[in-house]
Image (cartoon, rainbow, N blue to C red):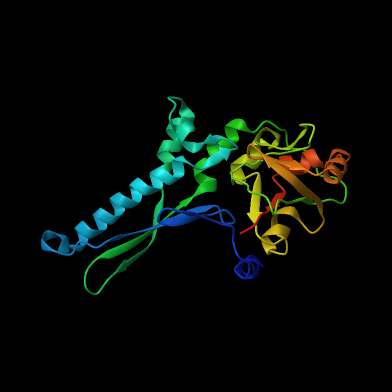
Length: 250
């Protein structure tokens, strides 16, 4: 079944954010970067030197891109790592654990390395520290929350915020349970609600909501959606369990 879901998901375009040398796949929650070392003269003909050069450059660019990733609207991973507390140390250590997915060697010299960083695993400690809800029983017919944010310019974050026009917060990091934060991100992003990842996260009977505008990185519900969600007693439990999918433009 898992293989079938993965195969079906491949038929849908992931949500990609282009960055220097690669992209952030917000559907798979991975930062993927490719670096090529083309030094081929003198001592640089040594494959080991070429690999080390590419690896060092990958480390530098992954560090730079990762630091700019927002954990919550306006709060970057870099700002969390700049402190002197235990969280900063854990994130800095976790950033060193990116992996080389593939190495390609060219016939006339040179090597290309594909580096990948799992954002969920890396930033889980930041989510756990900010998560503040209890694990709540999910009752009723609704299985999740499906938020349509297409047509709006949205800075993607690991834990976005969704509010009503009056400021009532519906989705935010402190509404996530600590147990959920250890296992999954608060939301996933897809470019098509028919993507199998939607049902995998939000179930077969999600509550639908539409975004009217985005202000300072925060998604604001339209009036009909706000009325529907605030009247639903199930929403806190669904959000605490991370059963939220956000549909955005590619």
